[in-house]
Length: 497
Image (cartoon, rainbow, N blue to C red):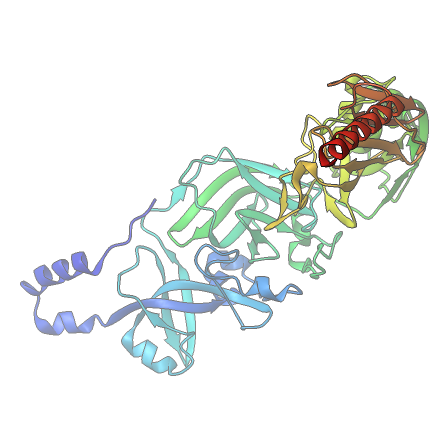
């Protein structure tokens, strides 16, 4: 990437020039370099050219995030009002000392740099107002990366991500501009649009995001139905341009509802409203599914979440998706020796499907998400329960695998959870009871067993296993113990006499 030219090299050049240039000429250049807090509108004015428009600040409902503008933080390179609003970009500038003095206290937070930046914006002042040039970059770059467009994102209507990125591809953007084949240009801002190297925006269909932030969409409505042919990333090191040919399909307000169905072989129905008359509908779900005329049929479908995708064969409009659930009352797993395994009458494949769909695991009174953000992996992919797992700094199983716990494992699509009750035994083998909400009956384990073996009694939907350490009937053992005690007492009495 680009280098920063140090004052050492600049000083050497100045010495050389002074040797042949009169002092009056050298004194005429009073340029100073620093950084300024530049409002979005001023930052983008020269970048957009004839497409320039007022670019709004970003007010955030998640106030602490708006303030994360330090090195390595979410919105590095931005600046804010100290409360909840991102106002613009902190960027390197070059300005004459005279113009800087003319700005007085309204100098955009000018902070002098100890080094001459390789890229910067020129600042000129007239009637007390500053004007900022486009970035002065002697060696702009073109990046050969892929562009992936998503039309389903929680952060708006569209999201662009870059794929096949080289290691030195910069993901810290001071700004970004989408340029379209019809000559338009759209400026992007931090948090609402620029996020961890990705670019997202609303065009008026989804106007809020998961944290409750209202999305500005008016400026981006024109992107629908256009083709982006250039993405200009403005980084701290200058321009990085990505050429592309990405069509932005048209989105529209609609309602698609799919009824919940039963797993296995069967059918369910769906309704759809709000589609344009020229939308050429095609339907898709998954292997083994067919959809048409408001009905979805399927064969040997496992329990879980599925997605109906409605696509436009004409490629003008964006896909529309609707999620639905197939359920079962079956409980294909049981707990055995620290692991979830196939229950009697079920296959390993059926057990694996339950484990894959685990949504939550409750230990005692505390519930833990098994997937997604801030999830805790208590049950492994092979069904093994991790008794050493932690939530933050705290152990979930305080007494490890030998403790006493009630564990409830719930999986998406399975109406009955697996409830595990563990009880630490004094012997090396722990007594374990596994039940389901559907069949919670348990039976007692037999007391007769040989050493090192386990006695097991099965009931419908329940298994009880007890560690065995005795060598015969309990009644016989007690009788023998009584005789031994009586004999010992007689010997002691005889010695006393």
